[in-house]
Image (cartoon, rainbow, N blue to C red; front, side, top):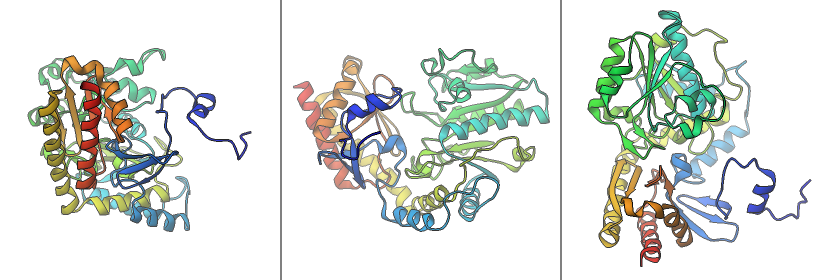
Length: 405
């Protein structure tokens, strides 16, 4: 048993936590907006957003108020019951999207697991058991359950765990011809990220997504959009599919949906939902009142012209600052992404310095992410202030100066 007087340090992780992560040496203890403080009181500007999760920053006062209010009513009921926050949130998601039905879970992986199971079940009930093939894309990422990590297109995450689920194949992202060579009448679904996140912040082209929709119609396959990272305002629209003028059959959400509180959702149409019956899928905590009350408030705040148009304004400011930095250091090959999911692609001669760059950035008090071997990822709060953007970029500049000169 740990004594109450025991100092909790990074060493405690090495002693007590299963070593599937390699956390940084400092431990954050407090956050407000886009700034956090560690145990020693050092301040950091957070451009990571909990990997695109804290969409309204840390400890947003309205979310705190809603969480406290709901915590004094109901925490958990299980799926033996429904509850008012879940019903309100479902209605809000349906009214603001293409969907007619919602399934709540706790993480992006769970939402995708539900989507893939539903796609196979739908095809088996409507067509045949043989119609079970799922097409995904190389370098994609859809979660860490065994099914979702196998659908993801990065073998480093799925190898060494025994035989993978059959019927999963991968095509090249943004290359419709590779999809055409793989799709057939036994394909039940195509799943695609509208911006590949872990794969390097690579947006799908409009023509590619439109062609996928045509192919799915042609082969009676379902089109699944994984919007775990891009959904709920991240790209300047409530849903990223709105940029493409293409409607999916299934869409998955998590991350920004809860603003830091664990919740995810799978959205679908009445047509697909028509085959569902009680018992074919479920989850103990999905749709619990605490999570749904918070998520409802997150959407209420984000789904406004001020916030959504502000995302594009903040992207322009960040890109402007990054271009100034690049004029000085000639470090970046490309700045890509959409809204506040930004990838800074390093020139090949600097790729081996990416870990060093992130380390020195931390020393200067700014938190950045990676996406692949040569991409620095930014996914800050959707309401990060101009002051925090400017100060964060200045700290980034100072970090690069120490490395390169």
